[in-house]
Image (cartoon, one colour):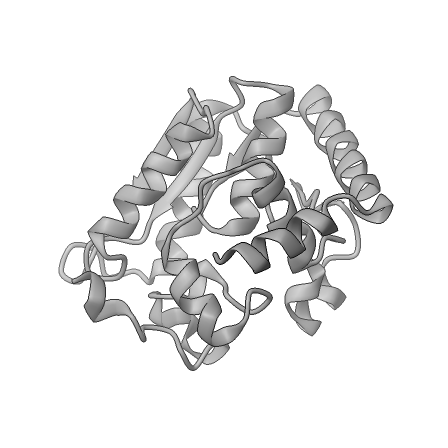
Length: 217
């Protein structure tokens, strides 16, 4: 991120509206942690990075769950960076599950993903996920996610904009995958979405997905 972009996000972090969003999200997270056995879903992307940092600021021992998309989808240098970033955030109670590639499991990535969540809920007694979904990302999300607490999960960042997310990351000096710097220079900082970079199940969301894959092979 160049110094001018960083300065812009730092200025954004001083806005009253931004500060009110941070305060509101902390209140939502605190309510969830006080009333449920929660886990935080951490993909390694910008939204989950912010959410994880917010949650850990209230409870250092909150469980953090990470889904590794696997060797054939997520380049290992990026996955290593994601895990390193998670450690830098101060997570001490981490659960990592890995997607099985072709030949090991015939189920889809989605089926494996939700299957592991359900298994972990039974294993660890989790009854609520803290998820970094934002309404701004798509019209579908605007219509689907009406409440902060919905269908057994909690969405504290629903009202955040991309600028809010980057302002939080920059003002708190949080780590993020360096691949964002490459994609965002092409797509814009408001359109780069980590989860779609390398997963073919999200190909329809971003025509630039996979553009830099070979750079990391």
